[in-house]
Image (cartoon, rainbow, N blue to C red; front, top):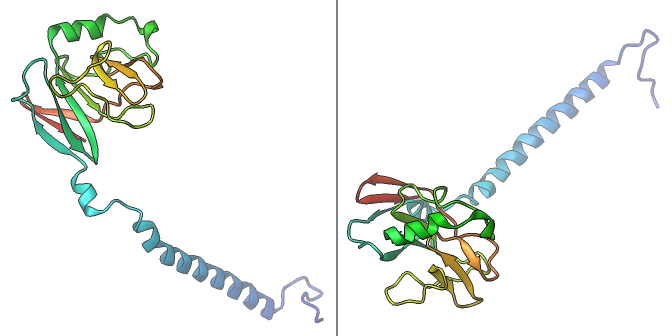
Length: 183
């Protein structure tokens, strides 16, 4: 094996060249790997049809007081309920210490007469009943999941049954008094 260090302690020219080639090869390899992975990472982004459904505008002017509608957003049902004064009062009067997932009604709504929640039971992902006229609304006048017996109140909060959390409130904003954008 040849000596790599002169008596003065300097590296020989071949070792400097070898260090440079190692560094350059590593840099090119890292850049190449990054370029090769880019299409795979990009393929994990949502498709154009999913992005088109990222938000939905709903005309709420035709929902009478005391009624609810179900709209689809990102492949999930969303319940929009035009609450009565009685439903609003019931939701606001509940003591937070009585709730499985304590959350005030004010924290769940932007306008007290409108409740907007994702209609998927937080227990096992079933779709609760209570949106259509005449459907069973459970013990608390909200929604009822017949699969496992979860009862939600007029604010979409879990009150009875195995569900561990309230119905999810999606991002939404009122565009006008008669239009809401979900997502």
